[in-house]
Length: 136
Image (cartoon, rainbow, N blue to C red):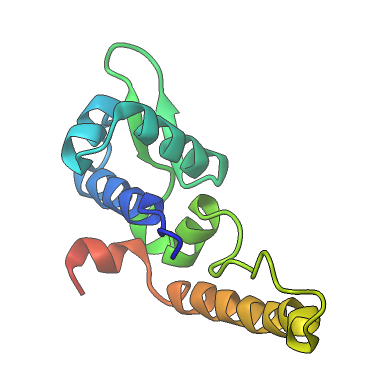
């Protein structure tokens, strides 16, 4: 069984932490300490969040990261799309082409998997970061 990534959960942890700090920027070492992750992984995740326009970076000695907009304007769906690449479920990589099911299985599963991913993104889009911060 394929192992799922924790990057989405770590990204949410980072964003909740940034959201609780207001305008005070936090550096990757501080974020890594809070998440229990390596600073390199945090920089990669924060880079993805920055590319998606969810965080901004401030350079310099007092630099770090902060939310680019109010937490109420950031949906969990936006975070998911910024962090998670690829599909939710993996395709069957080695079906037997001589089998009548093996010939068709990926064609049958792809639309189902695509619908599932769309449903996840839609559901996550219904909750915003402010709700996580407030605990509701």
